[in-house]
Length: 371
Image (cartoon, rainbow, N blue to C red; front, side, top):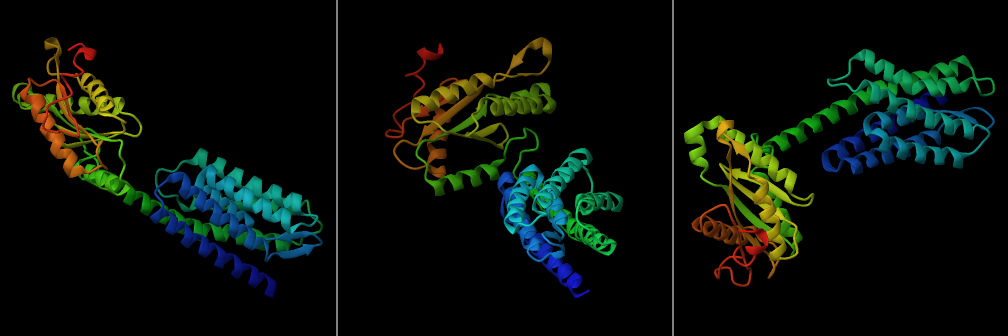
């Protein structure tokens, strides 16, 4: 009886620690793959520690709650956590050794894969009800329970105890982890919503400032900052209504997203104004990227029979002389945008960093763009 109590206490303690680590990872690690790998590492180590305090019922054979740890890893960390946990736990069982090692390793792999496949089929959109949790916990316990019938003379008492320990561990701690996961997911969604422009789907001004502030800390030196306005946007709203204006903004936002590179960043700063950070290595490259963006932003609006299209003006500044600075970059990019508008709109002006007041890059590159 004492050995059953010790095994239960050890399992509950380890699972509680894994639950706390899971919560910490949900709160502090934003990168999904890294967070899931951390979940797999924690539960893999938990599985090994659980196997170090097992119930020995035959020479080389042991019983423990590995199914709960492996199942929870697959349940809350997906394939990444499942494979990390399976690898660590399988290696641990192999090092522990004994005649039951191959079967024990097979149980670990079968549990992880079975639960992960179950989650792929289930995909709950709301919190799981008690029937779903019971089914999942039984799924975690099933491989271990079936494996008993391939081992020397297990007792019914032992089979029932280990199955109950696996089921109860998943029911209790799995439910706690699900609540933590949904809470953090809701917080991340709220944070994303607060930093996203509802109309265009692009980041908003707040996100733009935070992104630029983060860049200033990294001190990169191969960036261009663009300020972009939709030309005569007020007349779009005045002549064709706000629905047409909203459509134009959404279309321009989509064009920006589809044109920029994976490492570039764009945000709607308000009204018809957009801020863009380009990963380019020269003023020339920044100008060419801005021109591609300008051409992409010729989107239709208003009555279809009129075949109306937007145009945009872009002002930019390349940080050649020093590290990225949002305040300085916006000042010079706004100056360049003013020049683009003063010169007739529907064009790109890039100020050179060494002489920001000397003029634009647009005249220098006009021929290459057929203007």
